[in-house]
Length: 242
Image (cartoon, rainbow, N blue to C red; front, side, top):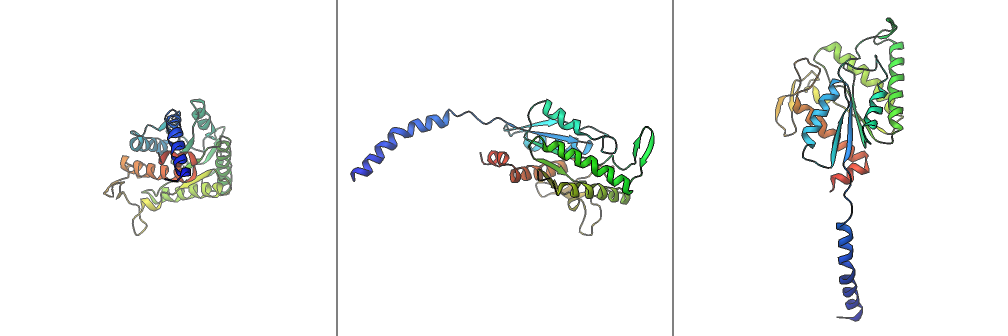
């Protein structure tokens, strides 16, 4: 063996144990908290994410959704504040709109009828304010768009809500969208109550009300949420590689 090679081997033997010791003593990364906020659809998403992540100790979930809320009734920025008041979150997951098929009211009087230009302007304002408030936290906001609904008029209204959200997200890079409409229709574009779960098995995926999902569907969309987070967040990408 040449002298220079022998010297390299001795140095490697001398310093390698110290390096290994330093690596083994490194503090483990704290769990990443995902705050799920929005309406009853979002609460179902909390359940789906909990199911697929329950064995993954590197993640924590904050359950911040509330039934019967929507942007026609409030700005909902308090949901973001409550999530961070409970502890630092590394991502926000939002799903809302099931209760927004109604007019804006102020002091008991109609302020804007559903679907009118005035309604769209008010809705756009609240969506934008919510996204901007979330942006101050410097974490990704994953927004799950509304699915197709069983009733044709409900699908039309869901498309209206989705359109406003999509437009608002274009100028806000911290917002990333997950589309669910194509998941929830058949090959002819009609509402589908049955489609494939995470295992590729076709089963009942929509609730009897034609609006909400069954648990396997929430798990399916939850898997899409985690894939998207790993695409947009270095923190979540590195955790997936561990």
